[in-house]
Image 1 (cartoon, rainbow, N blue to C red):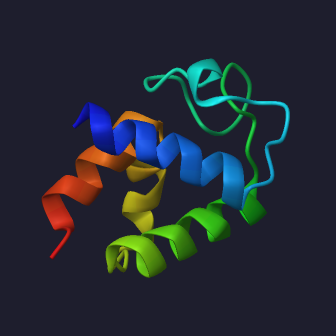
Image 2 (cartoon, helix red, strand yellow):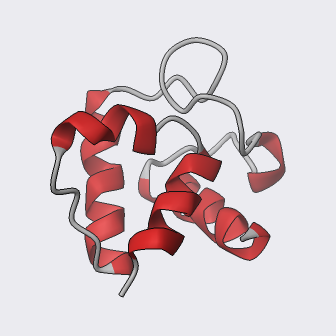
Length: 85
């Protein structure tokens, strides 16, 4: 799981152009959106959806689940490990 978390951090930094951030700067349990975390927005959420589809073959079937899935890097990693084919 830790390996997947580190990979996700690198993918987020690269795909979302977070140049000033290193994987070590990202707390796996911190919120990705809003204050206190990375401060991502709805455009970033679309990029994360693309990462899931392109890199892991996962489509989010129920958009209402997105808020819980996208809460933190750890919740994303858990979702990937449970749903990856």
